[in-house]
Image (cartoon, rainbow, N blue to C red; front, side, top):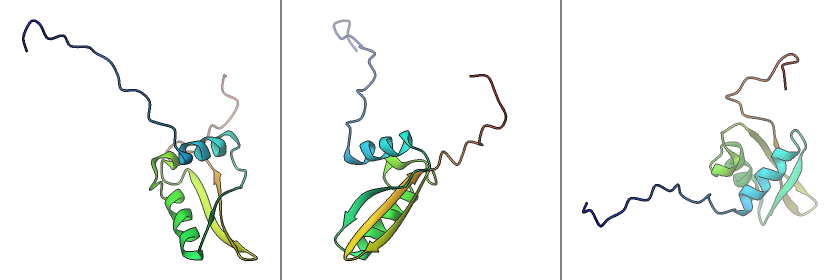
Length: 99
């Protein structure tokens, strides 16, 4: 590195907002409440989407286990339902700690 080169210490910008980050954020805002988050063309795709949410295959739903998801067919519509249940790596707060 020469004297003419300057090092600029600057963190990267935040990740771009995605459809999945918006869905995960909405679910986190209402913990424990089920919501329809996707309508799929087939039963297989609905089941796959639910599994991707549960396992946090998509980073927005991490860590694995923080979201529950199931697929159901209602009439002819294949739906994915999900809800935020919390970070499984953090134990629940017990008692009335200071806030």
